[in-house]
Length: 293
Image (spheres, rainbow, N blue to C red):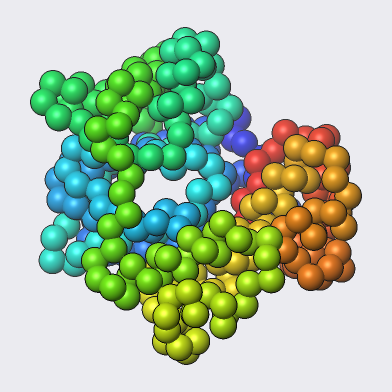
């Protein structure tokens, strides 16, 4: 199967980001991500043993054994581990194009429920079924035959049905470990929801009840983002969606996403993406490529 085309602003060009549109990896891990990030594909994150903590968009929560997190494309996230308590995890990643055929197989409602952002807990026989599906997917990794690819799609569809059936048994919870994290999470949510406003470091630190210097350090430590970097990422996500899906002018989009003016938006977008907002819109209409920032 051909790889998807992805634009990387750092490389200033299209490249093949992955050999396949489906990948699965099982490992034992204890080293935390240095920074929060997001990517242009779905990621299913299952913990078999141990537990870890995640920062997702603006919330902190825990993932324990038997729980699975679904991260849709462009979902900001960071995973943190305890060095003294390794975690056995399986990560499945796949492009929207790879999984699209499952929509008609499992049905619109189940498909949307299974692939929405959230956490699902499996127990008893349901956990056995989920882990069996992951093991069967893992067994097909490394083969390129058409039959193996067909099996991956069939078993992935099964996993989606299991996830939808168990939805609600592991609701995503905001679980800060102390008052400092609770305040950082409160500030992150404020930024996430009010990205279109003229939010300053002073505003965000005030929401958290901290000095600007202390807030900057703790925000980076907890989320993986600097304050300005986090705010720009949120604004860029919304801007890309508007450029891809609507007909608003670049000036209107800049204002709607909280950028000071169209020129600043254009410069920021070009620096991040390697092309102007107008060229991005043209490329999205001309090519069905995925964008990574």
